[in-house]
Length: 198
Image (cartoon, rainbow, N blue to C red; front, side, top):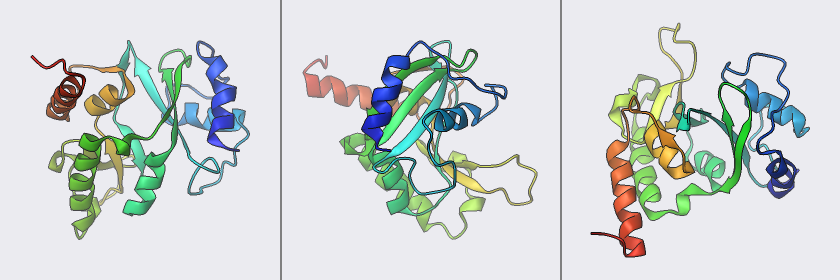
């Protein structure tokens, strides 16, 4: 299936829910149900579509609920392919209702691209990614990818909640600690670009 085909199926479903047999609050259940609904191959493969990636994000009270997980493969080409052509489905964390469906390619934005290159390159240069803390970067974070019960916890690449909320057009709660300075830089850039700077 191509991303555009999935977009045409899901776009009319904004305001509706996808049937989920398990608790919607459990991380990953909504995305899994969406893959089943679209009849995608549920195996572990590079991309969900022939030409892009399906991503879901939970929103609660109008705000991005958590950081955005990109992938757990630490290879820059692989990471870029995940971000190059995304079908992003935002859904209400409490009800499972689809709030928006949008096609995105975030690395074309010069500010995001610059931050991506700086932080992801730095992360990839580290000798052991599992020893990196999410405190070491501001926007693109290496975060624990499992329950945290291991001696060394596997890490995956995430985008911090505040910048991700800004990028997707959602808000973010005051509890979002990382990436707020980056959001200010993005806002300044957009104001300057549109000639609205004070």
